[in-house]
Image (cartoon, rainbow, N blue to C red; front, side, top):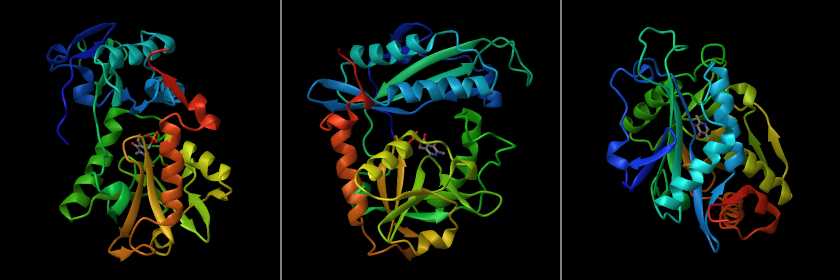
Length: 308
Ligand SMILES: Cc1ncc(COP(=O)(O)O)c(C=O)c1O
């Protein structure tokens, strides 16, 4: 998806012009994947742009860094302010937000500990991740032949740049085979997540999503959707799923900051349910998007307003 350029990027404490936000070719992270990042969205509300679960994303960002012994040279509060600053300075009402902390230029070799840590926060307008029609029509997915990084090789609890080469393999395989997205299994054959989304199934009016211990990312949208579904009266379980659970479900959907709540209409060429967005997926989308717009009092604390 091409990036829509905006004016400024926050880089190491300053707002710099988009074109000047560069790193050296010998940055450690470019060679060894030694960066951590977040993906966050800000939504348009009647009170201007508001960031969805900013605090949760910031906490996960710092947890990812800690896991890799990376000390971010700014406080959590400072990066939180940077996110708000960069949205304001680009006058955006809604956008995607990408904070990254990376091992920069100065040392080579696998040991990252002596390389400086550089931090940037970029923002840009980003529409529906899996295509404009996907939120209504649903997507076609393939169970990948690539297994999800095993947790004792690369920890699913961290959102590290290098770990995503696993997702890249799965995503490209699915696209080349004519699907929209991939879902990966763990080494035991249980469902983990998509290349950038968590997975839910609906069966007999109950929801099930794989537990974090299966090796999926502890998605912030996953948590929000579990809370919303429970508030709507649905039973929500975190249990291991195998691929046939997806084939036989009444409804299947992805959750993620980029993908939001995207229905899955086919898995491995098996039509799921009626082959289009199911009623519970639609209801959850309605509740989710009302909350992101600041229309639901109950979830008001999930939004951080950029101006105020
Ligand atoms: C592999 C993977 N799973 C799940 C998710 C969904 O997580 P979140 O809802 O926090 O964006 C993401 C996106 O960050 C991801 O990259």
